[in-house]
Length: 100
Image 1 (cartoon, helix red, strand yellow):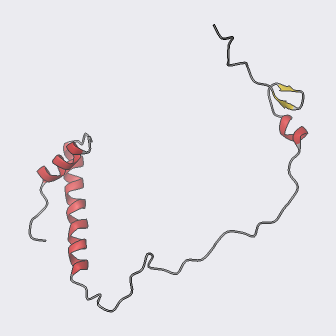
Image 2 (image 1 turned 90 degrees about the horizontal axis):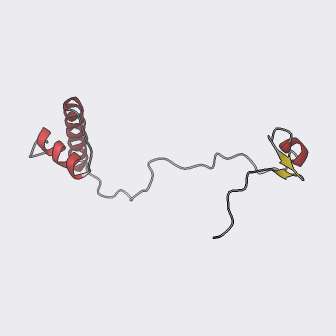
Image 3 (image 1 turned 90 degrees about the vertical axis):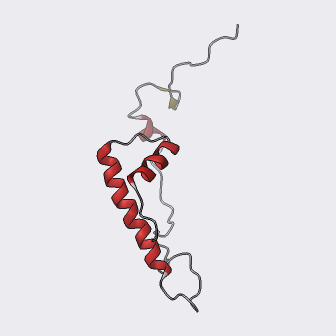
């Protein structure tokens, strides 16, 4: 990288992003961002000619379980813990008043 990342650069970006950072945070983020930018520069030096573009570095596998139907809980067991069940439904206070 030709230009080193300065603390003022990080403070300016934080201000543009409307972030308030303490002095300690500015020091920490300056160091961390400089390392990230240096890593990006290092990647530029790799010979990637002949490599196919990829969206993910590893093969993706579906890790979900099979979709198997099973019986539900039923209204009675669900409403058993409700504070104010009413006619097989959850009882809730009225929130809409009469129109003026």
